Image 1 (tube, rainbow, N blue to C red):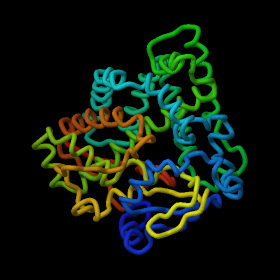
Image 2: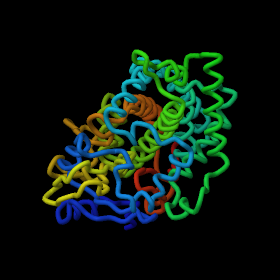
Image 3: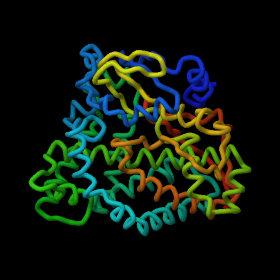
Image 4: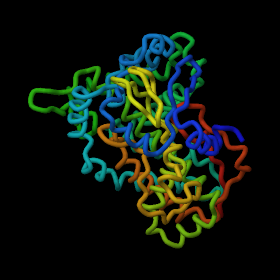
Length: 399
């Protein structure tokens, strides 16, 4: 079977035989892939593992052109590319804006958006759940969170589709010069104008909260502000889209678990955590670079040598999880690492969980007889080093 469709047998072999494996990415980026749970868990919060690509070897930086998307647009200063004390400062400032209260305040909007999307789908008896449900739900919620005016949301949605294609495109193709699509440039220009407008006319969105965020006399500068908005945009909708798509597929391929969840909707929270463990939104964490030589599973890793942590593999490690390849919506004590760990734990995890809870409640209540409309082997997965998600999920149900 294609690795993208089912990487888990290969990960099982790597955990047993070669838990630290040299890999080569399309643009010539090389690194070590770490696959065991305990190693991944420790390294996720190890202060010796830098997230700043300036700590990578020079030949690696040249091969990858320093992350083309971020460096060419000036959007490289955010939580995934910085270390303490810079990361600590950014996280503290952003956390004052991205609060649990702000996320919880979106509950009614998320429910209304979900209901509206399902109202359009239900009468037809068939749907493509990624583009017709998961994506519009996630991006509309992000628009509400950021404070994008309703009049701009349709064009904003199109730009983010362009952004999504760019971030998930084939690496070799993406690296042929500055191949940014026009829609991406338009999106970045829009965010710049939105920030300028909000400075003149404050409202009540996350953009305004980030502009106002301060710690004593410290605040986000322009590059940091735009970088954080872009990170929240990508991380915010990609996590939710893939949670809904991958999670729905897991239920459809395990009809006993789908039936159990229908019978006991109170299991939705444990089901969400199992979806994140079983087939989460991200294949790997972003690159890390040791600040000094480190030993991983008996392998010496030199200073600066790039390291990738396989979240997908760690979450199927039998040394941590009983029956790791079994999908069980009642699984207890589910200490997965789908959202990372430590200082870099995903800031948007509460939002993803809120959206997932409401989305699956709606899908299970309103789409009886839910089933795949194509054989599972015909489903296509995104081509991405980091992201794990379906291109499409066509389904049928009883109208």
